[in-house]
Image 1 (cartoon, rainbow, N blue to C red):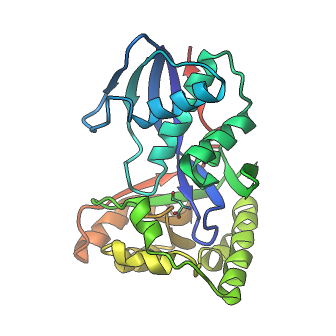
Image 2 (cartoon, rainbow, N blue to C red):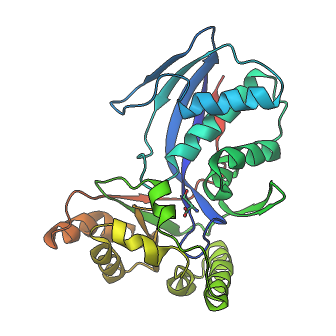
Length: 298
Ligand code: HSE
């Protein structure tokens, strides 16, 4: 069996709807090998599909099809450290893991770029799958079904303070709440801020982040699904967040902080939420994963 490590990802970063994403140092692990049958299990208590509808299996099968091969079966063991349906890229991790495994079994016919394109086709948008594959802070654009992307490192002192709620939010539901049309004013508002976000995270210019996380395309319409969101935002700014945003489609919330604030957040964030009646949330301070998914054991 080979063992694959895939990072969590945070998409959008507020203003970069469907185009920005960052890989984080929280990982799912997959042990996988070709087999005559389908044999899927989990190392933890998390319930996963154990038949052909398993997303790792489906993604591996898709790669075989693209290469004109038939997948006989797979043995898969999952270790799921990325919380599911929380806006932290758990489904992208499955897609990317399945593709990397399948590609290796076929002798690596697809390049990393090919994998980026195929992963995006399966997921529907590139802002989680591309950073999961490339690592770092990734800007992606789609043109004629192809992903054009650049990964850059995030300034070393930046941390992502992740608030994970005790409830799930399906991406489908969160996307369903968005309008079909926006004004030019809204478009310019987000364009300018997402460009600022990339430059600010790359250069470590923290003072720009409060403006760079603002957006008018998705967060205002998704707030209603996230109970306690106003308290989490307010409290994160009180503790010193440079910019707070809904991670991906939500419901997790991320406060961008630096290494000097990490201890303060670890110590007080959850206690302050509970004192204000927002119960059951978890907090983790994460760094950027700069490498992306990889095979860690052959
Ligand atoms: N860009 C996507 C969204 C990320 O906001 O809907 C979630 O997969």
